[in-house]
Image 1: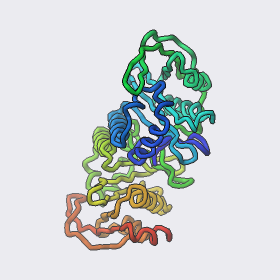
Image 2: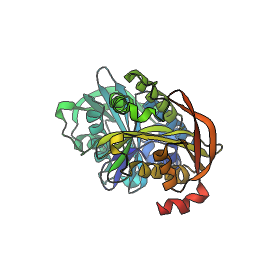
Image 3: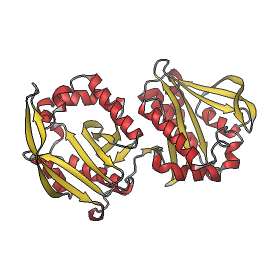
Image 4: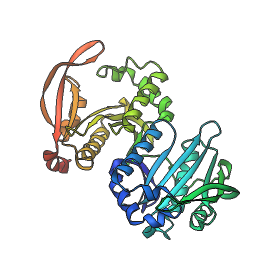
Length: 375
C-alpha cells in the first residue's frame, strides 16, 4: 500500500477502508483516553464513522488538500496522523495526530511527526508547519518539542474539549511551529510510495507529477502509440493533468487508481486499476513502460504485486488484462503470471485510428494461490 516507511517498525499508510475496522476497534478500546483531548472520539462509535472519515480524507487528497495516514507499528494500527489546513498560497499546513494508549512511550509519534514534516517540505514544498495542543496536554506538546518545533504562542480560548455527553469546555491551545529553513531532513526519501521490491516502487499519481509524466510519454510517443489509443490525444501537459485528475477522482471514490512506476529512482512507466467493482468483485489492470527499460522484468513484478493486492487484500475475485492482438510484449505479462487467455474480442480497442482485436486474459482468486506462488 502507499505510504511512508519511517523505520523498521513504523509505517505511515495513506488511509483506506482496509484500515477502517482496525481504527474503529482501536478507538473503541481507547475512547476515554483519546476523548480526553479529541472530542471526535466520543462520536466515532461505529464502523460507518471510520469509513466516512477515510472517504473524506481520500477526497481531500484527490482535491489537492489534506493527507491522512494510518500509523502502523510492527504491522498493527497504532493511531493516525494527518496534514491539514493546507494553504497553497502561504505554503502552510497543520499536523494533527492521535495514538492508542498501548503504543505510547515508544517514540512512535515523534518519528511520525518528523516523517510528515519531511514529506511536507521535500515533496509538497511547504514553508511553515504548525502543531496545536491543549495547554494541559503535555504529552502532545512534548511530541512537538522532540520533533524540533518551537513554541510560538498561546491561543486563548481557541479550542474545546468535551465529554461523552457532549458537555463542552473552552480551552487554550499552545502553538508550535517549524519553518522550512529550520528543518533538517529526517528520511532518506520522503515520498509516499508502494515498494514492489528493492528496485521498484509505485507512487500514486498526484498533480506534482504532471510534468514528469508528460515528458516520459512524449519521449516514448512512437513506442507507445502503436498500441495505446490515448497517446495521440496527449498533446500537452494539460492533457496529462486531466488524466491525473480523473484517476485521483477514482482514488477518492475507492474505484481504482493510477500510479507511476519508479525503477532505481527513475520514473519509467505507469500502471492503473481502471476500476474496482466490489459488487461483481472484479477489476482490470492496464500498464505501459518506457522503451529503454523493457525486457528488465519490471512490469511482471508490478502486475504480480497488483494482482496479489486485488485478490488477497481487496478480496476481489477476478482480475482482467486486455492486450491488443499483436502486442506480444504486453501479452507476455499475464502469460508469465499464469493468467488464462479467455478469448479475443473483435475490434475492441483503437490505436492509430485502426480498430484492433484484443485478447482478454483473466486471473481468478481460486487460481491465484497456485499461479501466484510460482511467480
